[in-house]
Length: 74
Image (cartoon, rainbow, N blue to C red; front, side, top):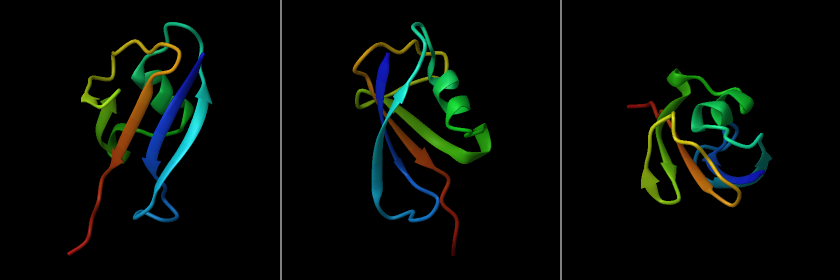
């Protein structure tokens, strides 16, 4: 199945990027993060179709996931 992922890339934190990721049926948000090589320390929040979600959320074809990274600075 194909999932749309929106995220702020590490090379340019200020511009939202978008890509399509192919996952197995019944994949979860955690499976998606692992495929994108993102750990718990890399992510502040994940939104599933515009709503806050948990890593155990099962995804389906056409879902949109938005990933918010940790931001640092002073």
